[in-house]
Amino acid sequence: MPDHHQDYQFCDLHHLIILLIFASAIVACIGIGVVLLEQYFTIGFNAFHFRPEQLGNYGTFKLAFIFNGSLIIASTSMFIAMIGLMSLPIGGLTKLVAWIGIYSSICLFMLGVLPLNVGHWHFVAHYNAVIATTLLGCTSLLAGIMYRAYFSKFLMLCSFLLLFFSISHISHLDISDPQLLSPHVRHDEFCLDPVFAWCLVITHLLWDIALALKVRKLVQQHFSQ
Image 1 (cartoon, rainbow, N blue to C red):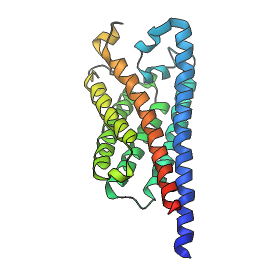
Image 2: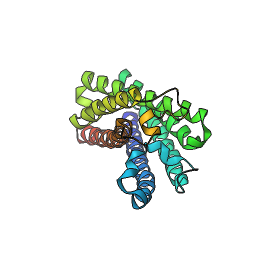
Image 3: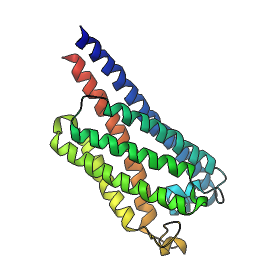
């Protein structure tokens, strides 16, 4: 009887984790989408010349508070979800993914609190966020190889793309610039950096959704036995 009771406790925790991950992805999509849409109606496709985190600049974008607010809410939801994930009876490497997920959510929270206007501290938060995302892609890909039964092909693909785009993005950051902007971006020239940054954001959202779907499937499999 105690084991059965514990099973239902874990079921509730699973459902909470799934809900929080989906909520995080939805809030982030809404926040980014609203600011991006407003910029698209103003300057067209040139809106994509900005990196995603630049949309939080209060001096340039009048809806920056929506972007930063969505980052804070989404990262808080993900932080709680990752703590919940660590409480589940999962493998050591998967727990490491959860730890890095906590680190990543803290960095994203700091990006919302410390926008581009802050200068040096935004630089620190942004750089840590990219490093955290790189580690997240690497460890989740490794965990997927070692625990294939627990990782779907979609989650594996998202992990690989997350690692690829994060490495590509970090390789284009200019650490000599306070805003980490490459010379091309500073002179309004075409650069792959914003492209990689947007691909990274989209992939991160897809990774979140893939993780939530896989957790949901594991719950269904467990209680169907």
